[in-house]
Every structure is written in C-alpha cells, then in structure tokens.
Amino acid sequence: MIRPVKSAKYFHLAVVVAGVLFLASALNSYAADAAVQVQLDVKKAGPRAVESLTERGILRDYRFAWTSMAQALQFNTFDPLEGPFSGQARQWLRQTITSQQQSGLSRRYIDQSHRLEAVFYAPEGDVIELYDTAQYHLQILDGDKTIHEENVVVHFIVLMTPGADRWTIRQLQAVPQFEPATSH
Image (cartoon, rainbow, N blue to C red; front, side, top):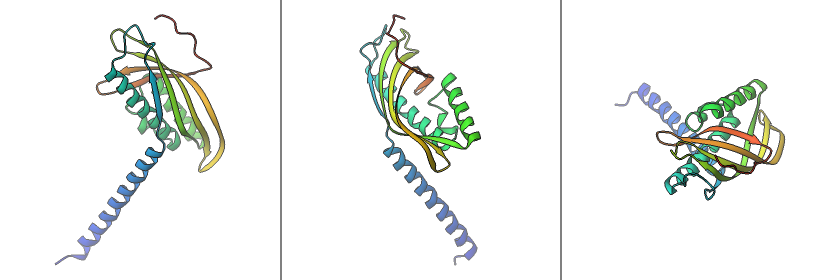
C-alpha cells in the first residue's frame, strides 16, 4: 500500500529533479549557442616550440576561460572564475563583478572570436605569452534591459601558466595595439 505522504514527498522530489534537468539542459544549449571561436598561431613562439598537445590544451582552456568569464559577467557570479583564472586576471574579474553587482549592471558577450598568436613560450614550459585580437558584440544590461551595445575589437596581452590539469589565465591586459615582438 502506498502512503499518500510518501508519494507526495516523491512527487515533489521528482518535480525538483525535472526542474534541475530542464535548467541544466537550457544552460547547456545556451553555452552551445554562445560558442567561443579561438584560432591559435604558434609559428612565432620562442625560444621553445609549442608542442601539439600543448597547443590543443591552450585552445581548449582559453575557449573555456572566455566562456566562463562571459557567464560570470552576465550573471554577476564568481563561481565560473574558479579554475580558468588565477593571479591578477582573477583579481581584476572579481573586482569587475563586484562593481557590476553594486551598480546593478551586467554585460553580455555575443559572437566571440579570438585570434591568438603565441609570442613567447618559456624554455621550461611554465608560461606562454599570447596576443589576442578579440572581436565580439558587447551588450551592457541594466537588469533585463539593454542600455548599450556595440561591436568591438580589443587587443589583449595574455599570460597563461600550466596547472595540474589545465592552463590558466594569470594576466589579461587590454592594450591599444601590440608592440613589435622583442626577444625575451
């Protein structure tokens, strides 16, 4: 015999589980729609050549970092920053999110495209410097209302370091233009 109290309890649990699965599915489809395009040119890296496994890891982790950053800045949450960012980059992003939370604003990155050029890869393999020419559509939101939007091209100097299982962005600095590469 089924007790009504237990079946109601299980019914509510089933509703919660279905809601969580629906939300996860919606977030996954959003992430698929918001795919970050990344191209990496390693021909000019030195003094060490970038190995193909390292190249694949940097592409994967850079794409993941920008997807995480976009989610963090759109939803004003720190959680997506844990893992793909460290050092100055994580500190700057946390300050940006705190400022957005205080103002009630957020930002959305749409149609991201990144052209990376490796300009320095340390002999020990413990740091890589990249130039990123990023293009995206930027929206500034006040709640659900878009108050500003524009297509932008931004140049970033990026330092990434390897961790136990991924490359992390330690520095992400916007610059007006790239200086000619010098020997390190």
